[in-house]
Length: 602
Image 1: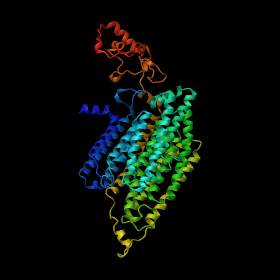
Image 2: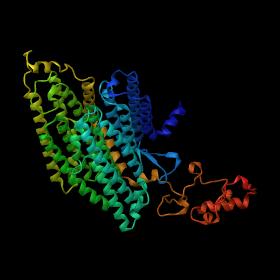
Image 3: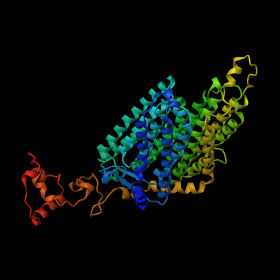
Image 4: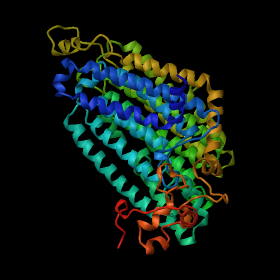
């Protein structure tokens, strides 16, 4: 048992990627008939069971990571034992552990909810959900910019399929728009990576942060320009204006569990802004540009989202605009560039993710109760579950608009408190308060139309409306209401445990701002305490090709027999290795059998 635990802890970071990856692979191997056959396919219970067990295991793993990260330790996992910056590294710190827990706290109830009914409306729902989880976990754990791009592509490809889950013309049309926008973002991502690699010579986050101050002015500006181009990409992912107009319509056509699941997608962009533009490019030049950009777009996004919510004609688009508004509020907190502001922003981010998912689930419940009116914000006959739905809507409205005593109110108050050192304090306070007021008006408008002005159902059996109303179910869709209750209870506990959670958030942002600590855990040093990196170039820093990266090679004296003298004397053989060759040549009496050696290079 101890050996298993030791193995688990030694390979901890990679497990959050392998669990959903293997689950998705198994689910694909199980096969999938047409969408119309899923409800009575004998493999469907197996798919649901495997998917749910994997999600629960992922949640338990994420919580164990959080407990480990809460000790202040930063765990670095080197794939194939290649040290950074030459190899791929996964980094488990406070921020990545927080994001993993948030991901699985959201995903596990949603997979449980979808397993009752929604997963049968399209093929490969569970497989794509776990591919999405794999991409999310990888993006939160990677310590390398290029692998951040790779995991972005994995989660995006899964999201393309999930967006089309349930099929339909509207989903197909908006799916094309969604794919096009993200393909453009991916192209910009690669261009930005090329600019950074061309100027810095590395894509490891810790290494880029270390090398930035050492660059020549022109190279430094090129690297910062590449970082700002990445910011544009992350802004698209986070749906920050002016590149976030796609979100309300796109999320509106997704099925209920998918739309709720997608609320974590915008937080990937916010995480990337924090990690890359806030930690990697943390010099004064880059931070000044970033701070001004973030504040402007944050104010515009939060205000636009609230105004758009007031004019929304459909409930799902209304939620999309509220998601935009909450993203803008988080970006305002990030723009202040202080640890307290960032910790307040992280606290509000967790709240906004869960409450937005709850509201999307409520949209599904309301749609099931309104017949042909669906989620249109129009006066319709009174819903059969009007009382319980209205209570849920009222509680969610209070939480999302930021009214006391809920976590949304606490998050906004904490953000406003951190504006004391900002020269734009008055502007920020006014915009945030106006946005909250507009959000209240938007929720009031929707509530009045859906509940207060609801008409009496038709009671004449001879009328068509009577038959239509009779078809409306008496209860909520399976597990829909229970999932909402679960999220609301979780948010209630979130505000009750606010002191402990805020303490964790403050330690998280302190660790995030300690670039030297990040470097010390990821980058290795030589015998002279110099960081082993790719710049400035030194042949001695070339990693050994022997398994495990060991420097001592008992067979170094065979090297001259296998390569040409020109290569042997060139820069590809480090001085350390050349010394090894010479020492072994002087001390080892060996006989060379030419038949056992590879042909010499020409």
